[in-house]
Length: 266
Image (cartoon, rainbow, N blue to C red; front, side, top):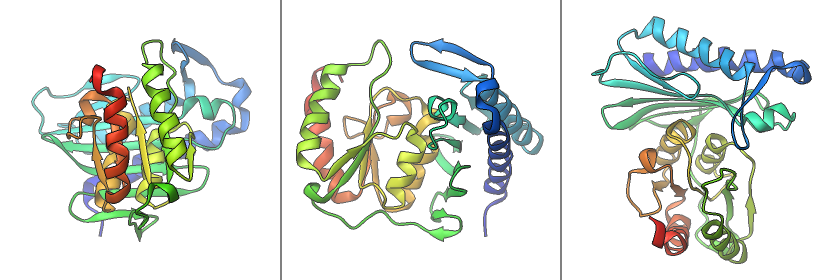
């Protein structure tokens, strides 16, 4: 049985998915603004976020909310903080590329305790509760059993911001590409992490993400039996935005590659 807080997150995520699906019928008519280099926000992002926040705020008025578009709101000293990406993969969405999601996580003190990643295209909802497990549409998830990098399928995200360290990324990319069965870049980190939890990817790494990109997905991986750290092998990934996640065996082979190539700038 889901916790009351997870049920509210599910309600909010499903409402946002409905907005996305309706608006996807006329993508060319959407109002879009450029936030930064290669970073966009559409009226769908804003509408989804407003709906999610309204649902969470009505249920839990004393909780903090950290959302991608509206920032941090709510009581300063709240024990709970909701972390929201209303549309992870906006660029994909605006191009009709079917890889985007709603990501909602709940942090209590310093740890993520509830997570929802909802894919409106595939009608897949990934959920996790700390200590209870990770699930896809109610079915228990476990990371893959692969142990060799040569058999692994690994996800990543390409650098797109002006201050991204492209040279370090290319070095990791080259080394991982030569060591694995393949690399994938789909463009929505929350779904990439959900796929690690589901065993569809064996590992994932990406630098310079925001907490709302990875908060929910990180709990999915952990509750599915995987490992998650920053590039130093520490648990500060929500702050640093650097994340390495994977099955225990593949993670153990991927992290040294990432750490070695990013070492000088960590």
